[in-house]
Amino acid sequence: MRYGFAVRIGPVGFRVGSAWPQPLHALTLLYRGYPSPCEAIPDFTVRLEPDGLLRRWIRPSIAIRGDYTLPEAAPLALRHGLLAAEMGMNLQMALGHRRFLLLHAATVEREGRVLILTGESGAGKSTLAALLGERGWRLMGDEFALIDCATGLVHAFPRAISLKNAAVSLFPAVEPDRWGPVLEATPKGTIRHLRPRHDAIARMDEPARAALILFPRFGFGETVREIGGAEVFVRLTQASTNYVALGEAGFTALTGLIVETPARAIDYPDGPAGIALVERLWNEVAR
Amino acid sequence: MSVSIALETTYRTPDSADFAPPVTLDGFTLVYHRPSGQTHMLAQPAPQILAALAQGDAAPIEIARRLAREHGLLDSEGDVVAVIAARMAELAELGIIRPV
Image 1 (cartoon, rainbow over the protein chains, first blue to last red):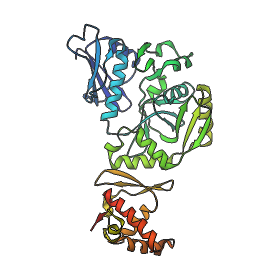
Image 2: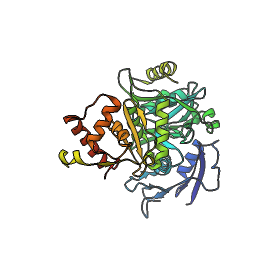
Image 3: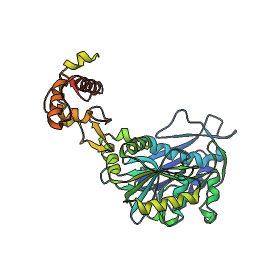
Image 4: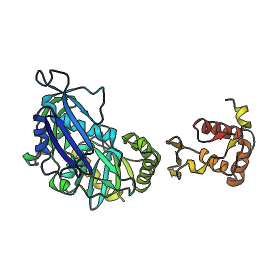
């Protein structure tokens, strides 16, 4: 590829190649201060290529390729190149990662204990985790929880947080240089990436044990529901991208996590209420 | 498979090496079946049937006797045997146990 960028996010090394310089310029700014991959060969490669012969120049559009590819993925406009790179990195993790049990979840840590927030897209887990990350918690990741199959510990994957639409306005006090460009009219609406705080990046190699699993749902009146282990198991297998691929190691890791960790489903109407509810449950329920 | 046939089918003792240690969650038993790589979520009485079958090859009526002996809750008559036969047929369909 003509242009290249390499970064390590937690235990995973990425190399991103691009036919255009712009997406990598944005990535470099967003990930400044992150380490380089530990080894000469990164875990995953993402390639941002023209979607067809002339698409490098004429109405340039990006096809997301890499070690793992979804054939039906729609190309993105060049102005959304940063999103293409982030989606490509997520795709490699979701389809190819085998070292950890992956849960589609946001994670934050305080005093050596981890809160796992998981749920479908739009449930507000990224936003809640980002808000907590600005309020004394260490953000470990907004996309994937990495569960070590041998130890059960949660490892951090603190990539830039993808905030959508109105969620961006919840962070008025964030330093301007932590924001990526505003990406308007993407397939997911308006998106802006937020660089995690310094401590989240500096401590990305520190795993911690899970203490509470929450299944949040944004936009509803406040409720808390206790959920049994069997339901948690079903929900987390749905939230995992590689449970089946890991075989028995995944079974042992996931059931171990569920046996050890209390879980609640919560509904919350807005960010401040969500934060207050999380803090209350952390004090009352977390192990 | 009709129930009348299943009642007489003898099933083979499952090889314990085929299963990871089961995990009980919230009244369900999670079983990881190594040969197929599948996780099964079993509700009562399936885990008890598997445990009873582990004592030796048996048909549903014998499983009912073993369960009655161990748990004191079941007898080996009528409906109970039919229920056990139906569950054993389902377990066999999943590949967890096999007819002899």
